[in-house]
Length: 598
Image (cartoon, rainbow, N blue to C red; front, side):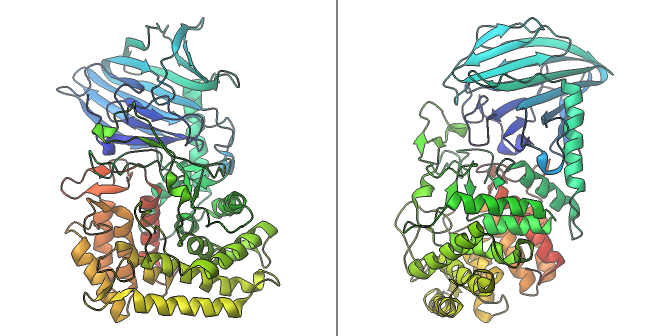
């Protein structure tokens, strides 16, 4: 069977891990231990890698129609199935710990998937198909019927306990398949609880009560955070998605829930995004600041400084596991077919080995933006991080690197990397009075000015009238749209106006999508939101508003963005939900609200 479109999936989270549930009622992705753990349901990447279907019999056939929406300000997803025999709702969530509120949510998640069925009208026959396949489909568990009517699945290190109110489940050889009927007004709760074979056993919860508790936990979380800018519903929802991508125990925000969803169907640019990138740091900080979530920023700073550790001569780390792991060596899962045949399926990400010179600037930009939250004198670990990053940039800015797009060919002198190096030195100068006696703002200012002169001289291409992707190159790259955002050059400067116009004309489409470079097979949503910010800063507010609304329209029916969008069909591509896409929306909305705020 062909996997369903990426845009058909809804996102569930307990701020420990996340799951994807399709319009067809099938949970096709869940790594219950933590975001970057192994899957127990992996049909997203191979038809035989595990799933949990709960839907009307014959779903997808004649007369079947689906409506779904999140309960406001939550990641609790309610799907209504309308069938010729009646209507039924299935409400899905990953359970919150009882009593967890605010930033406690996710710290002690019970790792339980809740699915509650509610009859709305008529009498609907439902099917339950539970086929776990732990370790990315490598394991087929033994199934044991339990005295209370549940089924315990066990293989390798994994235990899963399936329970359903009022049903005595029957275990088959490798799955549980059962049909039952639901009448109007009837409620039936099901749960799948994760446990370790040699550790904590699966939790036992009341699904209906747990669903109500989880809903209250999400609502209480969002009530703590107010946003007064434009497009409030879009911003609040994107902030909720970012919270769902946050690993609560450390504060790390993963780039996406998934691995190896392709940038192009059948292509090989399929990477594992279930880690936390320092590059995304500044953009994430901006987004949390805009969405009035200062506690998240404090946690992320603590995570970053501890993950980086003390500096040596090696390049600044690029990404980490959610608890700060450094070695994320990549391997291929050869037994998985990949999403619609797109191989390889990767676990791990070898970008951790790369030199990417833009990283320090992103981090120091975040420190500068939130300096008033961090005190007049920085704590030791934060101070050491800022000093270490600054001196790394001063010593290495002139080197080539892999750039923001993490190319896997030769290193180049990427313009966006040099701009970020300038940003690092500029912000370090501004932070010097908080850094103690080792601060050297005069020397840093000299390096800053040298970088700027080099960027404006070597990054500009007179022949095409634009800043290009790399020194000496004639190739356009949408990453140069970050230049006005850093304030190395205002958007009203003639060179920047020309660059914005060239990028929009050569890399853009009529519907607002923007490719990263000319041969990019799809539109990259973050780049479109960068363009919105550039247009605002250039004084073209009506055009910026129209572009923002067109790009926001590429979200799926429950407001989720993947990384990219197919230029011809509008189909979602790349890993999902993608943090950078939602970050881009939040920051663009605030730029439209307060053009001079950042």
